[in-house]
Amino acid sequence: MATMLPDDVLYLICEQLAFQRQFDTLFSCIGTGKRLAVPALTHLYRNYHESPLIREGTENLPLAQQELLVQKWSILWRSIILSSMGQTIFPYSRYLKLLDLRDLHLLFEDDKFRGKISKNFFSGDLARFNIPQDTPTKFRSARGPRLNVVAAINTIGEVITQDAPMLEQITGEVLASSLVAWAPRLSNLRSLWIWDGKALADDAVQTLIHTHCHKFDALTVFSWKTEDADHKLSTFISGFRENLLRLFQTISDAGVGAETLLALNNHGSSLKELKLGLKADFLPQLAFLKGCVNLEVFSLTVYGVNSYIEKTDNESFEEIIAWLRECKDLRELKFDNFNSGATLLTTLLIDDNIRLHKLDLNSYEGRNHRAFHVALQNQATLRSLLLQGDSEDMVGDEIEILLDSVTSLTGLRELNLGRMSDFFNDMHITRLATHLTNLEELVVSGWNVTDRVLHQVSTLKNLRSVTFEGLSAFSAKGLHGFIRSLSPSNRGLAIAVQAADQDRDFLTDEEQAIIREEIAAKVGGSFDYIFFRVIQIDAP
Image 1 (cartoon, rainbow, N blue to C red):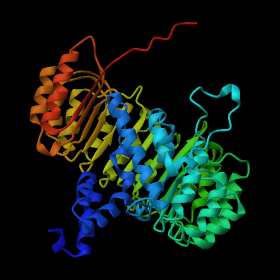
Image 2: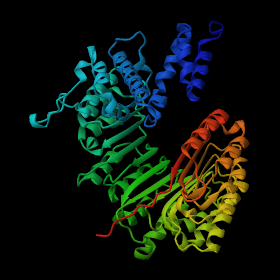
Image 3: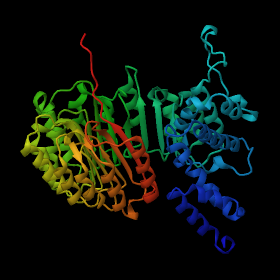
Image 4: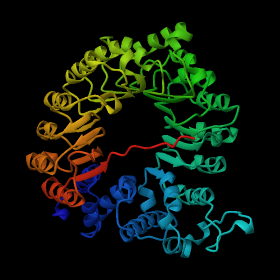
């Protein structure tokens, strides 16, 4: 049949298979003949970073199976490296759009990689990448010196980048010397994910990326610890032509301060995603971002103890609110460890020009933010809601207000109420399931949760994951009934009971095993069951 279809159709078919992560099907296509092998291999390696070998953990598998998966993982990387050296039939490296050196780093540091798998990996033409650490003799292991992982992945990256003309993204602990060598050959580079921002401080790196990487529009920096980080980062950002950056992200404290925030205004029209890690002392300087009004995604993680900025610097607080209200395209908001987050959101959510799809807020006290909970009702466009905070002393009326607001958001697909639902009972959780019929993921706490909630939860036809974090007492009979009520549309459903009450109804090991077998047979799902344990701290 493949010989009857034009090549462009074959590429489209393989593209869809890759989009659906049908890697086994793509692999089967390779053996049908060269016409189908080429598009299948193209999309297999173009999307290798989505492979189950990389994405799925192995911790719960038997040791032999874990080792087999790590071996396959290593073979995947070995084939990519050998192809860049011209040692394979097909040029796999030429298909790559993402060079994920973070993943290669994880492979090298996996305990199961050492020994036989490592020896096979670094055999033959790959032996030169087995770069040992310069470790003092008295600290060396009997198994020989440990691998210098950073040196190894940068040396491997040097080889791959010479034969990967389609690369658009590079991630990992890349050194400045590597970026100097790679930049001139990366004309399609769009995105960098850098472990240590110091790699960008070199003037040569900045000049070469600005000169050769004309499509560059996304920068992520994990960390930057030098005192001049803010100045160097702002210089790098300012070196691009105006309105080029689409995404800027810092994963932890990367030294972002006033200079970087002001430099981002040069990309105010183009910047769509801004995810910042910021020291608490620099919170008032968020007002410097007033030119970035086309944001669709804004995430803020605060490091250090922060006070309530609306009290300590109300003028800056009002300016920050005014800036965010100008972001008419804002769709996703996340505040992490930002004490004033709920107060800011109370004003923002009632603005009819703000229509969020995703909201993530933690580190707030529920009892002091009734107005925020009421304001949630104005965001009917929400599809994902995560609220984590302190529910202590939330009285009955406050719980009802939160519940009324959440149940009014009938378009929700993801709901995580965490500790904000610590005092929910069976009736409250049943109300959630009754009104939020589109839910695909549900995380809820609760107190003394029983079988009474299971029937209504089982009616959620799109449910893929449900986690009960609070004290619960589900019976084997109730869970069997729940599983029998599931629909084919619940395929792959993962159920997690994280605090089963050992003093009431609880499952024996045999009952747990039967339930796991039953849900696997019914919908290909899984079941995790953990007993509630009180951690006792001995007095000094």
